[in-house]
Image (cartoon, rainbow over all chains, first blue to last red; front, side, top):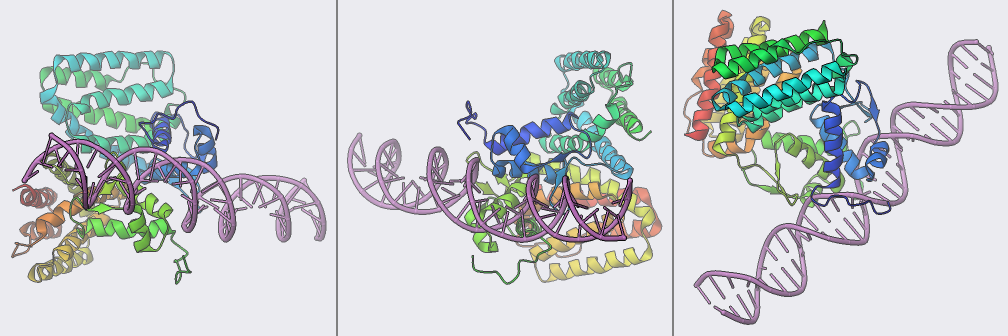
Length: 215
Length: 215
DNA sequence: CGTGCGGGTTTGTGATCACAAATACGGAAT
DNA sequence: ATTCCGTATTTGTGATCACAAACCCGCACG
């Protein structure tokens, strides 16, 4: 491998590979069932098989990728049961995160959420599924970050990761025409300091996403 | 490496290392802050650094081990905030698992839970902290398996894994003298088909564990 | 007695290689 | 034309190695 420009000395090679693949999967840039090879990943990121293998194994451990008995790695094709379960986990944890974020939510946060939500409208207008998924997750993450609960947030992101390829398959051609109504409901509840309302709004937002995935 | 007896062809080397370390951590056989080295693990399991590294990386990804900036790996020393958060996650997910298991719980399952609970009494009598933790987790896992929710169960086990070394530190000298009362309450609620009672019992059982961890 | 400093040692990282299993492909037989 | 089989290729696994950074320990200096 002739010298790369600069491998960014602060992060190790496997971490760059891991992060690159992770955002690609979470944002829905890959369809379910897509296969990945060690040598292919290595060549793409300009590293040898060793860091590529570590990145893939980590993603498999997190459920972002599935590994066949022969060791082949691919994005997972989820069953309906598995999807329902992951949606139930989203509800449980995200409702709790929103609830914990509520007392800490200042005006600046609410305005930021509105800005992000507007960006979501752009993605719908431009029929950009990857941008839609990314912006939608950013909306949720921005709120949940205020909960100051890193372990819960990490667990939620793991769930998002597992749902990434499936969400992409769903939003492949973005049929949606208007913004998700429950985002507005979440913002209203935040502004009013209405915890039961916020819990219901989050719950409904996730449920609606689930209905699109299964219906 | 002169030929090992037989490396058990069905499971790969890194998987044996992973499983060995995982149960060791989850069952509380390691104290917080205990360091692990690649060459040490490799020598202990009779493998080279490569599978040892993959096993450690996977455990780090699952939060069972923590990695310093320099790449050193050790069992984590959890802050009070982190412990509270993990306990909250246990409550959220385990209450849901118990609730889903309730309608499927037959008599045979309830009897098995009683048997395990009796074994828990033995561990208390013999002042065996590792056995106590292992049997306690077996009690919970036996119930949750009935929920038919593999993703939720996996997530709960990840939380147990993260709490392993901390629980060991707590139960180091097992001060407890009698069985946890809420296990009996769970069994009664299961027998009565009382879902609110079961949810409360699980919640209380986890809370009581948390109180011991923090108080 | 405390505090830097220096070198030897330990440790993680990533590349490369040999190997076996799985896969893909092409030709031959029906 | 289709199916089956054998070979060539692809692919994951684990061992080994070179290297640099981190760590540890003791000595000297303040």
